[in-house]
Structures are given as structure tokens and as C-alpha cells.
Length: 443
Image (cartoon, rainbow, N blue to C red; front, side, top):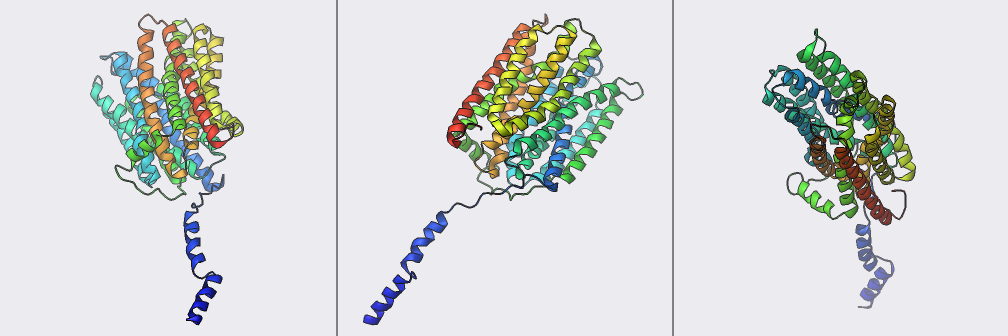
């Protein structure tokens, strides 16, 4: 009896019994270490370059629809109204952004390479099918270009942005700025190339579309070979890829909800200059050739606008910089009412290109910065861009209806300006909430 008791006391004193039990919960309670980010390196920058090529072929191509719109109205689909034809481009834009609701969650769960390969093949296939469409057959063009191309580009858009977050945290906004610059470069090159091919009797529409399909297919294949994921996929949740569960979870994040609302409003007003700047110049008596290149100037300058603000955002915070860009674009759109000369149009194109480039570039870093961990970045951005797509779908038709056949410019200008100002206000509110949460001002 005495030896047993002594042995028991000895074991307790040596920490072989109760201390071992008490230490186990403390070890289990420790949170797992978060992922580390290289913030650079060869593979990181190869992924950035590949993602930039994807943006060149996706959003850069989508923003070139004005060339198709002009050709369809004058020749290919001249049995339809301009409003009916514009829905081809609007639906394409909606699908590019809104398919992110699925592709973002699929990316988080390890389907990146499947999405990129599938989107690349579908994009080339749909463009080749567009080249086989017949004149005055609206449904053929709508199915191949509006639906097919929209879905194909949507499969690659959000994943190509999200994969960059695997390599960067502190420099994420800067890296995404270089990625987004690809879309501005594409929106500058694609329109000039397509316009010259469509209006060249030796090439024409059919060969022009096929040449464009071949070029984009080659660039997307190169991009797929350059990009690599780095972090393990998120475990699948209940439901279709766990999307509904993620959505319900994100709704409770007030900063995220305010940022999404700000993005919807800003996108609703943002596309007004891109869609109508050329028409604004022509109706004020400016040269038609200059009016076309005014849009090219805007898109060309936005290459700088997509990179420069990201360096400022690295110091002052991405949400702060995004709200500033939204307010700046709002002021510029209001000021478009007084732009009636060549010099004024060039000045507007340059300044709006700078701040507008920053606006569209910083949206993705803002939504990723509001993620609690890297495993939900794809879902956060996917859900956000889904709603932003509806803003892009509704904005241009509403502004066109306000413009009317008499080109009453003050109505759509005020509408777009108010939307952009409202977006800045919601983004400022998101900034206030996030700053309190993170206990710092530069968020």
C-alpha cells in the first residue's frame, strides 16, 4: 500500500500523469500556422505573366466588342436594331464576371487546370463557330459569341486572378496590377486588329475572326503552361462545391457586403465612357477617325492606370485607393458634359484611363484582402464578381435609354456619375469597418 502510494505521488511529481492530460488540450487549441508567401521568385512572376496573357485574351477581348457592334449594325446583322445587337456584348460581359460564382469556388477546391484547359478550348471553338455563322442570323451570333465566348472567358477569368494570390500577400495588389494591365493592352490591340481585318476586302469578317481565334488560342496555351498553383486546395463542403455555404458565411461580413455593393454601383456607371465616348465625340462634330482612337487612347493609358495605383495602394491601402479612384471617376464623368473639343476629349481619355484603370484593377485585391484566409479567396472574388456582372449588364442599356435618340447627354452622365459616387461611398464604409477590425488605417 505504501509503495503504491509512493509510486503514485512520484509519478504525479514527475509530470507523468495529470500534467500530460492537461497539456493535450492546449496543444490542440493552437491554431494551425498560416501559409507563407514567397512574394516573388521565378515561378511567381511566370504565373503573373501567364495570368496577364489570360487577361489580354479575356477582358481585353470583351472590351473590344465595340468593333463587332459597329460591323454588325452596318453590315452583318443590319436587320436588327443597335439595342438588340448590344445584348450580345452585354450578355458576354455578364457571363465573364458572373460565372465566377462557380469558377471561384472550383478554383479553391483544386480545379484550376481543368478550368483553364476547358475555357481555352471552348473559347477557340466558339470563335471558329462564329466565323461559320451566316449574315442576318442573329441567334447563331448570339449563341456562339454572347453565350459560348462568355462562358469560356468566364471559366478562365477569376481563376487566373486567384492563382496570383498563391504567391503574394504584401505585394498582391502590385502583382494583380501587372495582371490587369494585360486586359488594357488587349483592349488596345484587339480593336485595332479586328477593325483593320474586318474592313480589309482581302481578309474580311470570316478570316479575321479565325485569325483572332488562332492568336488567342496560342496565347492561352502559353499562359496555361506558365501558371502553377502552389497552395493545397480547400476541402469540399456540402452542396455544389460548397458555394451556398460560402455565400451564407460571407453575407455576415459587413465589410465584404459593403465592398460588393460599392463594386456593383461603380461598375454600373464605369462603362458609360467606354461605350459612349466615341459617340460623344462624333455628335459634337469631331473627326470620326479621331473618335475611334479616343477609346484606344483611354484603354492604352489604362495600362499605366492599372499598375501605378497598386504601388500607391501598397503604402496607403487598397480599399483607400479604390474609394479614391471611384470618386475621381465620378467627378470625371460629371465633367464629360463639358467635353466638346479634341483637346478636352484627349484629356478626359488620359485622366479617366488612369483612374478607371485603378478602379477595375483594385477590385480583386480588395475582395481578396477581406478574406479570412487564402483558401476562400477564389470564392470571395467569384461571388463578388457575379454581382458586379449584373452591374455591367444593366449599366450600358440604362445609360443608352437615358441618352435616347436625341442624344441628351446630361441624363446618362448624371446617372453614371451618381453610381460611381455611390460606389465610392460604400467602399469608404467598407474601409471604416475593415480599419476597425484590423486596427490600422491603411487597409
